Amino acid sequence: MLLGLAAGSLTAIASAVGVAWWLGASREIIVSMAPKSATTPIATAIAERFGGLPSLTAVMVICTGILGAVSAKFILNVLRIDHHAVRGFALGVASHGIGTARALQVSAEMGAFAGFGMGLNGICTVVLVPALLPLLLRYQG
Image (cartoon, rainbow, N blue to C red; front, side):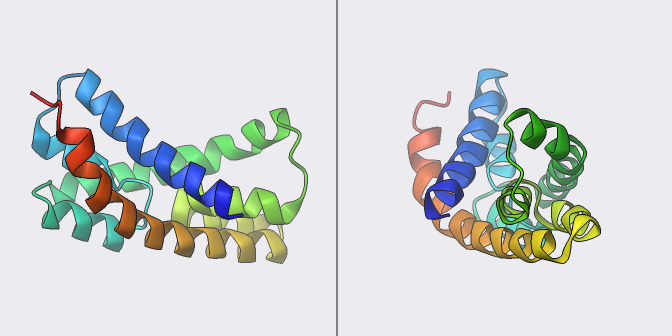
């Protein structure tokens, strides 16, 4: 679970920052994108603390949650992941509250693991974004 959590958190942060950087976004936009896979209160606090736009971060958090909740079933089926605990944990890490709500519609077990993944991803994001942002922004023009 720890490897999945680390992979999910790092991938979410690095991909958001990488795509924004590749598209030529400003530092403010990049900082706003970095915490998008945590829950809204955590993500907006991180964005505000590091000079991002909390309102943009909130929108990206919602978009991330919706996209994850809508696409998770298809992606997890393609990957042949059937166990409700694993599916729920992945949904919580990737799609936070919206994914967790969707997981609860499927089963209590999936919902419990989604909530667990969401909480752990919030903690990971609080630790990783401040540590990684200086490295990720080093080459930003």
